[in-house]
Amino acid sequence: MKVLKFGGTSVGSAQRMREVAELIHAPHLQRRIVVLSAMSGTTNALVEIAGLLFAGNVAAATANVETLRQRYHAVAQELLPEPAVADEAIEHLDQRFQSILDLTSAPLSADGERVILAQGELLSTLLVHRYVTRILGRPAVLLPALEFMRLDVDDEPDAAYIREHLASTLAPYAAEQLFITQGYICRSAQGHIDNLKRGGSDYSASLIGAAANAEEIQIWTDIDGLHNNDPRIVKGTYPIRELSFDEAAELAYFGAKILHPSSVLPARQHGIPVRLLNTMQPEAPGTLISAKTGAEAIKAVAAKDGITAINVKSSRMLLAHGFLRTIFEVFERYRTSIDMITTSEVAVSLTIDDATRLPLILDELQRFASVEVDENQTIICLVGNLEQDAHGAANQAFAALKDIAVRMISYGGSPNNISILVHTNDKTRALQALNAGLFQR
View (tube, rainbow, N blue to C red):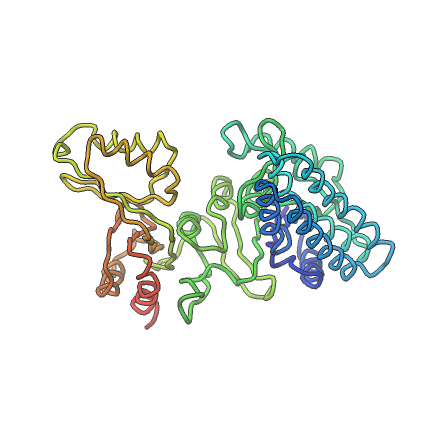
């Protein structure tokens, strides 16, 4: 069994859907589950519709639904040239859009919003399945993800439930080779429609791969693997051919947009390789993520914006037992994760990427310490096999940043990561300087 996930740009038009249909029928593939995202732009449109309904602007929301419906009608008619097939598909598409319109008669609830956001994946899988089975005449089973994807009471994926219910959903189709299902969407522990948050189709693929004991999980996007630096900012980047699970997880968390930060975890737990491939260049080798790592000390650089740095200083900290615990408990109470941390005899500096509860956090911290806050910060993450940094790659990185004002450095806590905090205004210069200092010879 293999699991193949295709992102929004990979199914972003009728032509792209046709290309995906050919890729999933390549002769070398065995039994496989294909996980699809919503067509590119759809989730943003659904978020906007939900926002309009929350604001009470039913007329604008209804108009947006109609615009989106017409877009899907056009795609269906282009993708499905047989009128009877197109008409049948459009009828089912309209049922999905009606489920959104049904929510306009009363104030929108959080549950209603999640119903709206689920429609994108339901629409894309319907279209691709109809094309594969009715136009190409190839066998394929449409698996409803809502029958086996579920969260637990802590809003984390319920791995045992997913494994059990995926197996029972597949059981009637022992002779079938191709299955198509939705990414991103799931049910809550209470059985309501829910989701794995933005970018969650990668996570779906990894969870499904783990549940199915897959041989490999493939993530198909519009770029040929994880690059050694941000190609939007730095010229001459190149795809990394091999990464360890830990290296890939660090890059995903710290800004590599091609991969959802949580998607590596189920694959790593079950030892399932993850291959990142390019729908537009299917012959490209992409990036293989596995338990193996190469010898390179630093393989890639990524950047994470939207960081807030907090400096907590107290004259009572010197040798004060439990001071760090007291600080961490404040952040735990407000469910705010810490990314970086450095300490001295009298101060602790740390960073967060979610400032939603910052005023409440500061109010508590200021009861026992003086606090300084620096906003608009960026974490530059250098990822590789730093256990084997025998040639001073870390020194090369710091030398490359000699003209950049560095706010914090975290080095040694992980064998795969050096984190450097800079002001966001310096991010571009920092990425370019690191590219020149580390990767250009």
